[in-house]
Image (cartoon, rainbow, N blue to C red; front, top):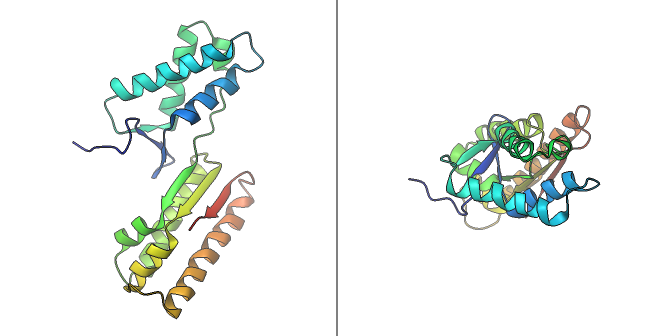
Length: 187
């Protein structure tokens, strides 16, 4: 059995990207759908807690596809007679966080080309899956792992710049199709 860092399953976005399913995101999604309708705010929050409870206590998997999650939410709203709220659900998945350090671990020390291939796959998957925000984090640990050093060197600085440039190039390439996608590199 795998222990998740929190009780909610991860949300699969695209073919290989994962996002955290967080209470705040669920609540915001449902309250936004209910705004401008006859459904009071407290009811939208209560439905959100119900969805959260289902995911924690009854959903058997550790990962749920974003399409499946939204379909379940719509089905719940429809069964409650809230078709008008179900129709207003914004099916934008939560932000995707990509661990550059984890990608470097998977690629192996010194295998920079494999790392860039894994990073491209993750970014493409998130973009094609409908994510609007992708945050890449852990760049310093990633670079040190790829360079196989504990101390920051000039080679580390060069590789950090190459990774940043690569993400910028991916952002530019994806912008033609998905101008709403935000790609950021956090420390």
